Length: 183
Image (tube, rainbow, N blue to C red; front, side):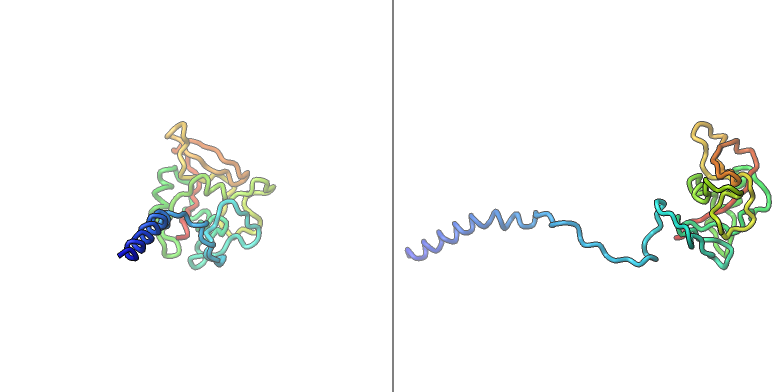
């Protein structure tokens, strides 16, 4: 009987000493983040912080559109696809109803997206990167979908001759350059 009591005491003491350690085991933080998984270049999403100087633009949708690998946006290859200028609201509707390369989902670009095409230091119009594949580019004004924050009757546009960004009345007629996301 004494042997049994001694064994029980040892088990109780051992349990009391080890139980806090065992109960906390599930609460331990991992030693660090999991190791990164290798990705191919095709799996890495584009970032707006990169600058691609060679091979930035690739034909898409049967040659009717252009993928910008720097931003991941797909642009209408013909930068004058509407053939005429349009007031801002008509430009938005035009893009929404458009089919290019058998695809819907086109829209007027935001001012940041449209401005991402220009090279501000470009000496000759249009202010696009040298060797760009676009056709019909007008050295004039192109609407963005971005409204001017100080006046809902105005919206932002890019002047393709200078690469400058301005805002003006939505009732004005400017060119339309549709875009869609590559996803």
